[in-house]
Length: 208
Image (cartoon, rainbow, N blue to C red; front, side, top):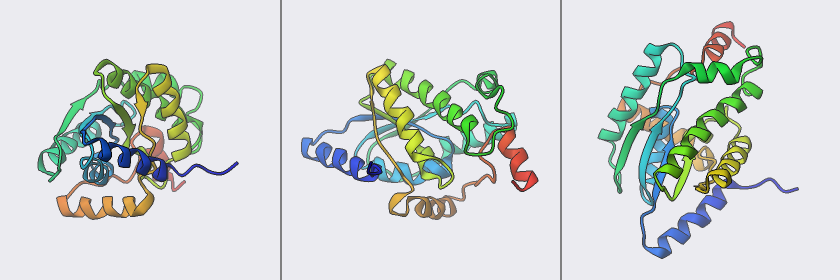
């Protein structure tokens, strides 16, 4: 079975949108300002974007508030073609600990992370469906440490469930991750050294 090329699939969709001369609405789940920087620069050429900041996994609360504030500030400052809005979802950490229960010792990038992907993408799919967005997707695939295949699998399944198209992506392609680091320097963004949850923080400190 051939591995899917999500960037080519995205190219095909974007080409079709250009031929239709319309600007669809995209709900973009974002994990942080640095990861969203390239995605906003790229996709704002084609979509009116609402950044949905929903990350109940982030620990501690001070870190969460720092990241969400920076997300809003980046959206306010970035030069983009079409409008970008920011909406914050609920910061309900109990939801994250509920899905992580029994998987606290999983390695980074394992089943606990997949559950976390699904938690955040499900909430994004619900919001996208309720708001009648044309598409939803996530910035998560820009990270070299995130599993783009799993993200797209979960996103497409939720898209079918909530009847809202999931925009396929692997934003690290075409040097997307490199561009995000350049934009982070340009805008003076804080680049955290752990994914966000208490388990990733502990893993980082232990050197694992």
